[in-house]
Length: 113
Image (cartoon, rainbow, N blue to C red; front, top):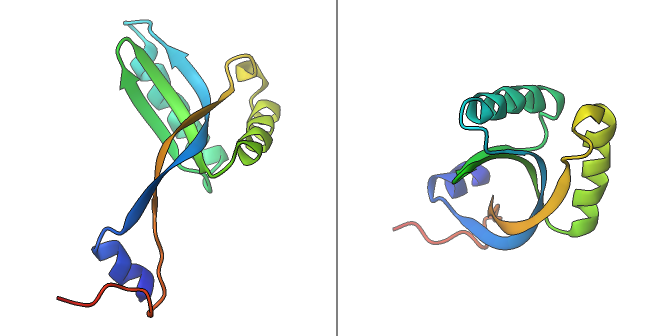
């Protein structure tokens, strides 16, 4: 119930964190399709980790996770490399701002308006 109330209020924090980049390509003809195809595969292989497909001209990128520290991201990147060895040379840890939901208990919830 508390999580539902918080979710309805869109309470979240933005903090510097880390993601594991598994794909980056600027091939105009196929990069977008490849990125979304890879996203489907990654969501199936790692359902516990959020997957992000982004476009930052001219690159399509696929990144995984919302890791709080570098060590967590590196450990997960090794798991991805062992699961998908064909991508091993492309997998890197990236530092970026992550937005995460903030779950509060009853005592710290904002008062209802």
